[in-house]
Image (cartoon, one colour):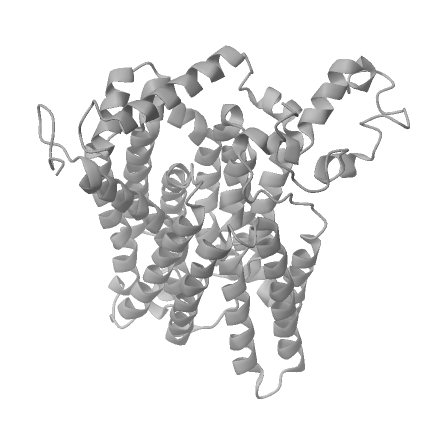
Length: 490
């Protein structure tokens, strides 16, 4: 049996270390979700509204949505920050900044201070939300558990007859952030980052610890060798990692990654109730929302990403149109019908457009530009999150029932973009899914096909002769469906 601790000073190794890393990573995702939901309950409370002098819809929208401004800023820089200080340093910085923002919110003295606190928390959230990938579906479930916990915390605190009814839920953010910051100090750094910055011995030690603490473990040594070779290969490839190079070479992938996050926000809308009943309804809905994320764990590698996105969009569009219809006809059964429609809508959002846009960008982007590409897609998420959060309270007052068919229209629009299926496709063969192997070969054989050549867009037989929408989102001369590389094709 492997020792529990190893080395000159006591440290976790093997399964205890793996469980600890998973627990604190989950806590970061939980905190991310908690902060997204905590404001939704307290803004309807009587003590909150009295303290802030009955804020209008735009003020409420600003207090809720301004978090995304801070998250947008740091999510763009998160990839470069991670390259400089590592994932552990990024996690610690995000938790500390988040805690500071939570403290400012808890002890706020007015609207302006609350907004400042939300922006500061957003800066921390942007760092904590970066880098989700292979386990995105499970992490999204953790995110929704955090959201559901914040809603139920709001509900229980609503029975407190003082300003503590909204200050306590905000203070819980600080407690969770402090635990996460403390945990990040004792967790090991990412071995890939250590090897990438030429700290090979430390990287090997982390890998060995994950495999039981024995540096001579053959599996650990093989894993270290694989990471080291990949890092060296990236350095020797000479491929630039700037945003300019990324955009020029992987434009379609970047736009698809960003659009998936944009639609994820444009497709999401919540119906509003008032008072304690609003929080209770949101809490019940959050439980169903959480459960709806579980089937995707199983289905994502069986049905595929595209099938889940498209099927979810169909049901969501139907539920949103039905919501608007029942609100328009305004019959005695309307309240119950709207509740059912919104629950159905949220369930299918949790199954489809909730988790998949977090999984898709890291899958389709090559390692050399993945950090920057994922940062851009995450920044798009926060930008559209802010847009929706800022204008929704106002639109609910101005256009009332029409808000829901409008979001249903966005669901229909999601069919315009062609999201290639990536189920079971190795990263090394992703170029073929997007037709980039054939395009690069054609450019090498005929310089006239290059975009910089004056007549490149004029030739009828040119690889680039199609309309720009077709070229960016779907058009290519590649295979219509993914086919693995045959033995004789390499």
